[in-house]
Image 1 (cartoon, rainbow, N blue to C red):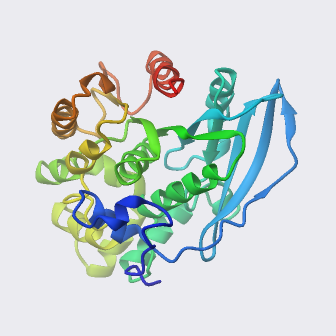
Image 2: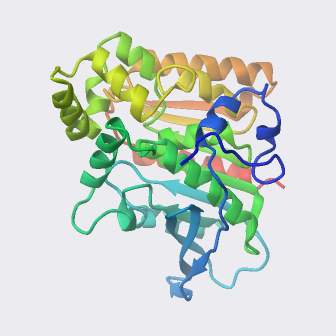
Image 3: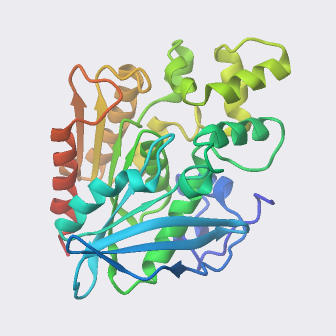
Length: 338
């Protein structure tokens, strides 16, 4: 696939017309030939007072994105939307409890399967497909299975939402967990149609982790891929090799597309960051760099009240119930405004 072929300014994002704007390099990296959405839906089902829809759409040649949509039954008019993104090894069905809660609050609630997860993985293989895809890329395949391809799918999801009569495309929020949290802050930095963002246990500085020997926990989420790549090279997995792996599999993730660079691009849109104080996958010093850069951006934009960070004390890689309550409240506060 020719990664240098990107879309005309009138098709997806006005950002593409403005090469000098921050984030343009990331959009150029993501961009690929546009294909028709060719959306398909299964007949609606009634579930506990909600209408439930299974849908798919094409995000690029050879890729269809499956998802679930829940909304209040007998809906009238367009409602605000919240999209939930799962973590490594998860799937859209795992987000159903949250979707039901969001739909009960009056949102159109949506979850999709990330690349090599859920319906997009081989039967019975789970996240093994995900690691195998990363290894293929390290060996020369032309895709970005770690984070970036799902970010592209998210941006195409925004296109699909703009076609729907039940979704208010001017009021789209998104919440993501772990891998989904990383995909969310990258997508929100690239696409202003995401009007409110809640990245959970995903915001981090990859650079800080590499510079300070704190990369092991994050790499552990795709350990089989990096171990096999290191065997190819006849070396051990250390910080230098992790950098080489990232350069091939997710280029720029510890430099121009790292958390401290991308998170500020979400300003002045509402942003709630949720992390655990003891989460080894998102080490606190690197997280603090991200939060400091975001606070500065929101302050410059005169939008300090639109940025909030919840650091869960003595908490590892999880989201506590009270934090999830605040996330739902964040969407209620900011997306119910017209």
